[in-house]
Length: 246
Image 1 (tube, rainbow, N blue to C red):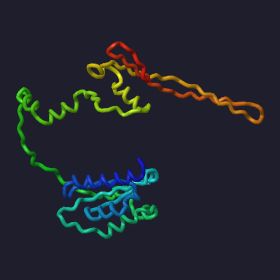
Image 2: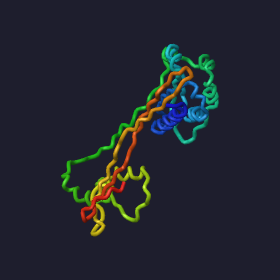
Image 3: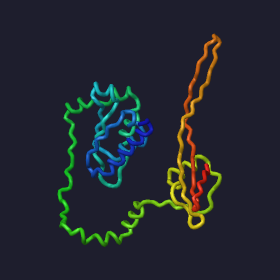
Image 4: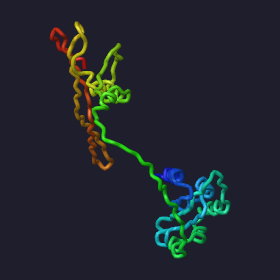
């Protein structure tokens, strides 16, 4: 993942988790330490959370990962003023020196017994009822529904339809497409124009040799092999005449 994609994902995850977090709920947000200095992220955290704690990984792990942990309680209510002190602190986290001096490690936070009480979830669960139904009762309604009709139209085998005046001359790419689609194979036309068509692709290898002479009298032979594709189209007319078009 490139750096820009990672940055965008960090913001998207923060916004999404906030949306589903209940009021007074606890958010734990772990990203690279310098990303807390992003103005969008720092302003969002300083505006929407209180009871905030910021810590970095332990000394051993921080050297490898350079990540910090944000813990905060989601504010309740519609009005949420920004915490300027927290905002300024987060903006300064792009400095490694500032982090090592001002952000405690997770072990230090644990030994000081900081605690965040997590609110309980919803206790009143909605009651619903269900019963087993006979599937035959739904068959007719499904068959008559527009959604099922659209599904059948999308999944039924497609039929090749050829009409109008042909675009000539056809280049090799167009002939290849016609061969792949089966348009140059089978029965075509009606009445006097009825005929059988057989289209084949002939694949062969062509070997080219290039000789390079050197000043010391020696020579180098370079052999190149390329693939050649030829199209062969034959028709049989109603009177039995075989014609090779290509």
